[in-house]
Each structure stands twice: as C-alpha cells, then as structure tokens.
Length: 181
Image: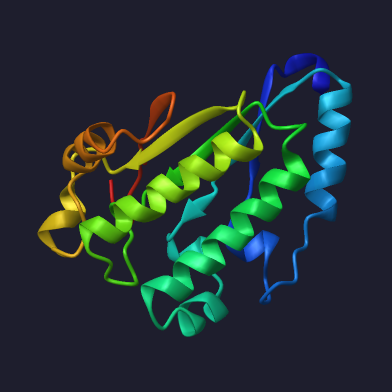
C-alpha cells in the first residue's frame, strides 16, 4: 500500500499518547513512523494541542484545576512528542480547534498563550518542521451556543497579530448528519 501513498497523517491525540499522567504510550506510533519514513513517505502529525473531548483523557480534565497546571501538562506532552518524533514528522498541526472546543472555559488570552507556547516549542525542538494552525468549523456556528469559544476568523487574526510563528492555516471541514458542520 505504501506505493500508493505520498503523505500519511498520524494521530497524536492526548488520549492515545498519554492515557495516564506522565505515562506516554507512543511505541506503536514510533514503529509506524519508522516504517513509513523508511519507505520515504511524508508524515503529518496532528495535533500537539486539541481540546476536542474525544482527544482529551478524563485525567486531564480532572487535573487541570487552573491554567498554569494545564499549560504545564500540555508543555510536558508537547516536549515529549517533539523529542520522540522530531526526525520523522515533516509537518505538525500546532493546535487544532482550541478556538472552538473550550472545555476549560479559557479566555482568549490564555488560548493565545497555549498557541504561542506550542509554536515556540515546535520551533525549538523541530525548527525545520512545518507548523500548521488548525481551524475547525470555519463558519463559527459553535460560537452562538458557547461564548467562551472564539470565532475562527478572530482566532486566525489574533494568531497573526500576536506574531506567533507558523507556516500555514489548516481548515477542517466536517460533513454529515448528527454532527456539527
């Protein structure tokens, strides 16, 4: 099947990579990355930070009593992933949808701080890797129901105005019944 592929997206959801505090489980992803890289297939990693409920283990929600604790946990995880996969991944999604999924009820300045920290860590540990800011629900329909979130174009504009280092915006479109989008 590798003859048919040019790029593979590897999922680095928090639930998969750190199901329990400080217990990283990346062996299967490492084996997959090594095999794909040996076949000269470009690898995309998603995502360093996402607060999508499906990507977030229960222990993170329980442990993140304040922003500093959440920031520290996210930073530790990002450092581990970047050190482990720096030689394999050609492009990382720095953040994915933290403007839309906000279970911690973070204000905009803290969302921007997490985005900045994630981008800085990417540049420190993998300076030649492409960094992508992931936008979900580009029409911002979620904002009508939850004003603790940030409209997608405002988030994108704030990323640019804050001088956060990234290479591209990635826009995720979801289709189908029963889901947002």
